[in-house]
Structures are given as C-alpha cells and as structure tokens.
Length: 191
Image (cartoon, rainbow, N blue to C red; front, side, top):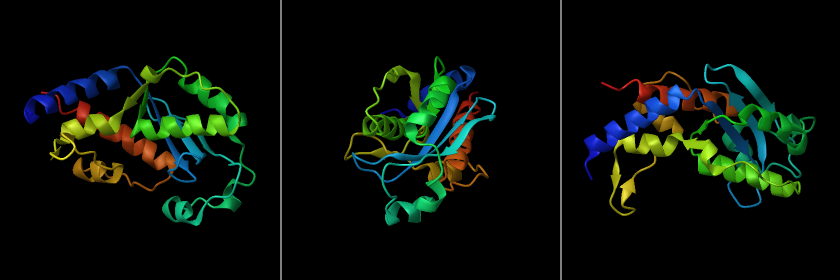
C-alpha cells in the first residue's frame, strides 16, 4: 500500500467534502449494542453554527457504564424530547445536505435503532453520510496488517495527532466541533 498516495487522496477527498459545506453530526447513546438509543444529538452547519444541540429522552434508563463515559444521567434526560419529537427537526437540518460524522456507521446505526425503537421508518439515503474517521485513517496511515486496512483512530487521538486544541468531552456538541476541525485540518494539508 502506497501511504503517500493514500494520504494525498484522503487530503483531496477531505478538501472536496469541506467544499460541499457539510452538516456535522454527533450523538451520545445508552450504549453500543443493537438495542441502544440516542440520548444526545448535535448538528452543526458547515460554519459551526449550532442547528440542533439537544438531549433525547430514551425509552428506558441509561446504564451506569454509559453514564460514566459521557456523564449524561437519567435526571438530565427526564424532561428532554423523545426521539420521535426531535427527529423532524434533525431530518430537516440534514435533508439534501452532506453529513460529516466521525464514525458515521455507528451514529447512523444508532439513529436507525432509535427509529426502530419508536416504530419509525428510516428513509435517509446512505450516500448522504461521510465518515470522517475512515477518511482520517487513510490520512494518518497506520497500517493494520491483521485487518489489511488502515487502523481507525478514535476522535480524541485524531484531535491530538492534528494538534487541535478542542477537547473530546464525549458530549455531542464538543465531539461535533472536534470532528469538524479534523476534517478541516485534513483539507488544509493540500499542497
């Protein structure tokens, strides 16, 4: 694998994504499993303007393990809107726009799961979403021989590697800002 070529291609793709003026999205969840749900979502416009920054009331309690990661408690979400009430606002914000997400497979899966939990149908096309994490893996270039691909870097590591002074707070707003900064950093490496 020619890392320099892959890195240049990743930079070109990042530059193209930034030029599309994407929406940025991040979520926090009750966990990582197939029945978990979104409990916080942030959507930023391409310029960093907050379009949505909301807690989400899940259908059940937040497990202690999840609370330890993001600090979102059951008390914090008790008066938050449930997913069906918030989704129309999210859908409007992202409709017909490119959506950049750090680990898009996870966040899209959790949006779908939250839809299923509320018997809602998912109608968003897959090509709407750009995975900043996979793009960054190619940019960073740490090869994983076992998997035969570039190793994914978590958001905190990517921010540190790019020397971005934004925290990875495991809260949707902070993580959305950091994902945006990582994509812009890659795009800015073009020569």
